[in-house]
Every structure is written in C-alpha cells, then in structure tokens.
Image (cartoon, rainbow over all chains, first blue to last red; front, side, top):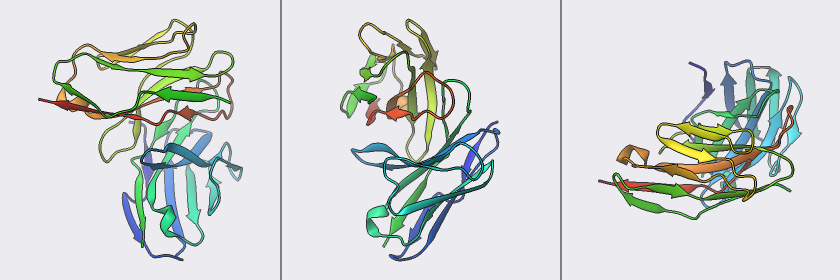
Length: 113
Length: 114
C-alpha cells in the first residue's frame, strides 16, 4: 500500500521555537509539496520540490523554508514559529510524468502558543 | 491564471438522498480534473479523476464527467450514506507533465444525517 507519512499528527510549540515537520513517501515520486490548510481558505501551497536539493516557492513561502536531501523525504522548517502559523500542514507527492495526481499524508495539526 | 470554483457548503442531506456538488473551472487547454475527499482528521485522498473531455471518472458510487463546453466537473452520487460525510475538493492540473501546480477549490463540506 503506497504511503505518504508525516512525522507528527499533532504538535504544540511556543512562539519563537524552530519547528521541523517531516514527510516521507515510498512511491519513488519526483515531486513533493507542502500545503497549509485553513478554514475558508482551502489549500495553499507553501513550497514544492521536483528533485533532490531542488525547491521552488509556492504561494505563501514567507516564514518557511524546506529541505530535500533524499528523494523520499521533504522537510518543512519554521525558523521562528509565530501564532499565525497555527494551521493544518499537509504534505503531498506526485510523479513527474502524467496528470499530477497528488498523494497526501494524514496532516500535522500545529498549534503555536 | 487557473481557478476552480465549487459550491459553498455545508451541504446537509438525508441518507439515500441524491448528491450534486458543482465545480467549474478556468484554465487554458485541457487540464486534468480531480475530486479529492477529506474525512475528519485525515489528509486528502483522490476520489476520482478525468484527463480529457467527455471522460467520466467514477469511484465508490461517485461520478463526475469532464464537460469542456461548460468547463464543469460536477460530482454526483445517487444515494449518499452517513459514511460519505466529509469535505470534497475539486482540483485541476495543467495538461503538461513535469511540475505543474494543482489548483484546488475551497472545499464543500457534506453532512449526511440518518
């Protein structure tokens, strides 16, 4: 069964902390994505990567960075967490070829106090 | 740019009722179209897809037909169950391969009551 896994389902952090969200996929997909999901706003793309060590900004990259050292792993980093980064974070992956069907992880609900 | 518009929710239906969730899109060419479903506390999962005009995607009793002439991809189910309660997202991806940004609608919450 193909899978995208995320390191935590729930996370509580304090303002100013550095936060790491990890995502791993076992489908050998080239593309990986980080979204945040907020009520009334749908899914917004933060960053994506189409290859190891490659990254591109999405629609809302401010306050975030990413790392992709291995093909199967894509990390989202909040350098200094703020309360407005409280959200649901979703990781996804897809093949380089084809219709870009995305496979999602279960999400990490992050609360910044 | 590309956009997806889907009907506002929440939609509340009785069990065994007929479901339609409207979705229209704006895009150049022939994008691929998707419906994703998100059950409470979970990530999104693909429900069905269609990659060319007049294709019908279907899965778990749900159907949607790619209508190029009306730029629509409405989701339908003949008889909903309580277990169908979830948030449904319409999405599109441009036709070329490689990295292509997927555009999602804002989601429609469906609540089915017994």
